[in-house]
Image (cartoon, rainbow, N blue to C red; front, side, top):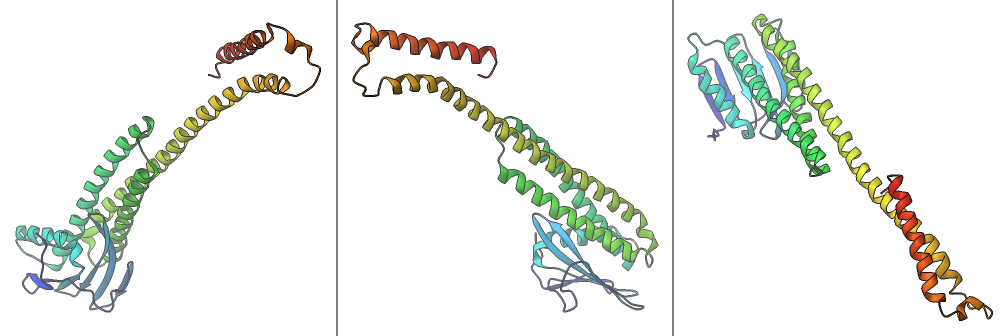
Length: 263
């Protein structure tokens, strides 16, 4: 259930969260490193939405800020703090980033499964450009969220050395997302290859039809001219003979195209 309060203290005197942004938190990838306070703003991807998470760190207190769109994520972090025996700023900070990375791992699994299904659909001619674009857009936004985690962990590593393992995990996750984006790009190329193949088949059929009717049209054009002296027109078998000739030409072309495997 999404927390619907504007401010809540999850761990007394240690962690407070507010569902509103302070003045200093105006954009993503923003930070202020001071002796007594550290301010950090990172992008967070959660359920299709890319939001900001702002973190304000003091020596013995942490304040986080976000919109209510990621309220469920904040609630999940707050529930996990119940496992703390000796809560501290470092433990809360570690839990926040660990929860973010776990969320990105789940998103990556879903994205990879969707990529596989999309590729199968492309091969069957069922996938559309819109489906592939949505998949790319989701992967790109989540990748940006992973970048945000790396950005935050790199800045905080010196002050909190125990976050190094999370930084390594985030870097590994970034590489995995880069691979997934490459696979989606390959799916784009495969999609256009399939579309081009379909178009080529249609063009080939139209070309064959045109090639068959060109000589027939020539014959019809010749005998459609209003010349006064065309003696063969007076022959009683002229009409059926012309039809036989035209049919023979069409049949001969069909056999030729079939042998060439053009149709």
